[in-house]
Length: 93
Picture (cartoon, rainbow, N blue to C red):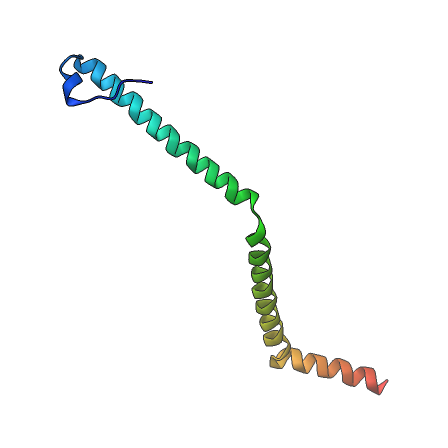
């Protein structure tokens, strides 16, 4: 592991070496953050307990919307007249 940069040892190293050490520390910190993000995402996607709840909720909303649309269509005047005509002809024959 690299020696931590302090005020005492910065005077003894060149600016380029100092920059290289700082870049190395930044990369290490970024790598740790990236690894942690990947780890958390992996845990999230392995744990599917909430997925079924969301799927059921979306299915319920979609079914309710489809039911409302179907009710609106069936209770319209044109469809009501057509259904009445069909039942009247079927019962009169």
